[in-house]
Image 1 (cartoon, rainbow, N blue to C red):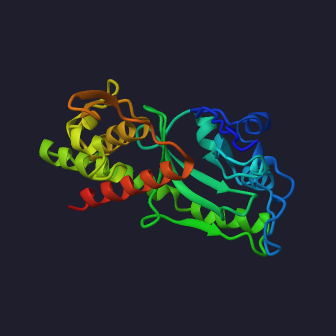
Image 2: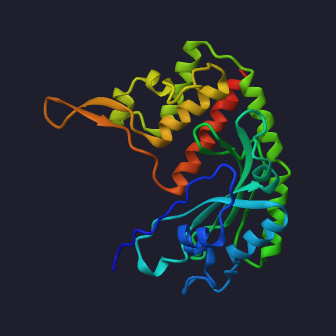
Length: 283
């Protein structure tokens, strides 16, 4: 068997933590009991399940989980996985801070030697249920190689990120206060699209940037930087925008933009968009 389609994603839940059964169903690799056979002798196995338990003891609950698609059967159960965590107090309160956003942490790990353990700061926006990853340049993150480490060390490192998550909410409040003229919003959308597609891509040549500014739902018609950022981010990540491009012959063909695929690609795009918005906030 040469290819395995094994990615499963648990839906983000606004105020409910994922159970152990939820995690096992959506990301079985979280529960690996040893490293993938054949990894380097220097590789130190650290159970993601144990890290989840340690973070739970510090008040962080898993709210979304997924794992990477893998092509080879021997990587199944050991591949990269991602878990998003929210503070238990936020889940119990049933309300968000700073309007409709709350601070989160994103854990990534793998048991096949392909990925270092990593924790990033993030945000969750209730309105469109999108999970944002905050850029490294502005907020703390931790990346630790699987060499002579322990689950306790991972959990302690995660706490350093947790202490910085309130700063993400401060950025939200700042961006909500920044009103953008239409020309500036179009420029933001144009530059954001360039983060998703190369200049040679037919989408870049055919898609009007103003399409990325079209509100997906009621309540997203505001022109502040935070709303603009979220509307554009949702268009780019979820796809589905129509455009007309030249076909292989002399005619034209109707197309739709595709959603972002893969954990790494989505996180990379989110971080680049966050950095772009920070640049517009400081202009």
